[in-house]
Amino acid sequence: LASVVESQQFDRPMLEELFEVAREMERITEDGSECKILAGKVMGTLFYEPSTRTRLSFETAMCRLGGKVVSTENAREFSSVAKGETLEDTIRTLEQYVDVVVLRHFQAGSARIAADAASVPLISAGDGPGQHPTQALLDIYTIQKEIGRVDDTKVALVGDLANGRTARSLAYILSKFRNVKLYFVAPDVARINEDIKEHLTECGCEWEEVDNLQSVASEVDVLYQTRIQKERYGDRPEDYEKAQGKFIVDEDLMRLMKQDAVVMHPLPRVGEITPQVDADPRAAYFRQAKNGLYIRMALLATLLKGK
Ligand code: CP
View 1: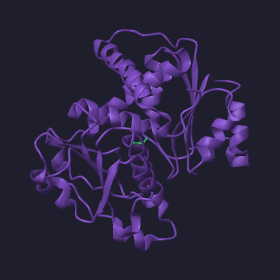
View 2: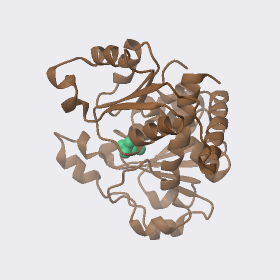
View 3: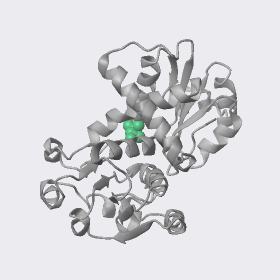
């Protein structure tokens, strides 16, 4: 692996190897063991869009492996991007200082442009409505841990499927597994894009678009809820209003779900899962966020140290 740009870069053997390292990272973190395998390495985080989980879990991962971090959040305002510097020049400069770059950008396709410009590994932390590959890795890791398998599962992707990069990356990576059925549950103004449907059909992966969350709640093993992304509706506020609040996971919906199903969400949430659901053992979203640390530790160790 030179860089991480999209989830479909990962095949099953690569995922199995990464998850084996992630389980070891989980073990040493829980033990409190000291690990210095990335001592002497520096990671640069360059974020053009806000983040809590991705940036802080990457930075924590690097610290826990003995490496160091340099960071600019809000790069549009607090880096020389504000003076008009291009993404490519920013990357070519940052790589003079660091061993790996973690980039979040507002434009789909920017991760590929940055990776092509970089001579050090570049990890996408999300590129606009494009992809969020490391989120998909931690999502698959979470499904495996919570359900015990990824093959032979039914998964509902819910919410803003037109703009949601986490749902896109997850759909692409789920197509690598056997006998997975995907339900897309989205408001009319935020339906899943054609490229995903075409890809799934080509892979022989079963999928269906439905407009009633209640009708699939009792079927699925994983209900993957997502936020309606207000920031992507700048010139269409009326579409945002139509979409927001259409599909809510609440205690009534949880009563319809199987006892061994899980609710996931990449977070942040803004009302689409009610706080009362948090106490339900099937609410896996904060455990999911924690898995992000182990997956990112595993990814950094693999990229910077090899197997
Ligand atoms: N899941 C996720 O990408 O969260 P942040 O935007 O907080 O990083």
